[in-house]
Length: 125
Image 1 (cartoon, rainbow, N blue to C red):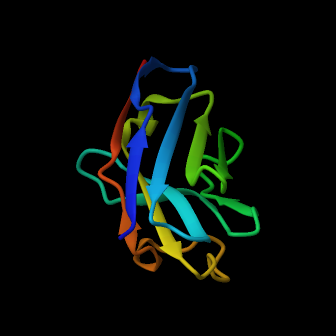
Image 2: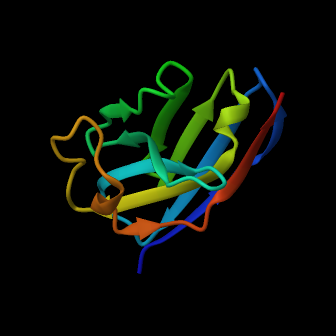
């Protein structure tokens, strides 16, 4: 059974940085990503990484976020720099095993089968 566990959320001032981690147990290679959901809004994509290491970013975070993974440790990471208050949200780790991220410019939320419980990120102005 695949389990995803996020960590690293917290509070930071605008312009600061945070690093998130996702520990994936029972997971094999495939497509992994980070999504976020702000209060009162729908969940939206942030960044994804394919099994070959290629990455895709939502336009709203491109240039500020960097997604990476360590296959040996089964960990997924998200480095977030120059944070803005509008980035305040619950951040979720997502995964789909044995298959890549597809041909979309950014795979939809429905593509992912496994989800973590989320970690809160709060950016104050």
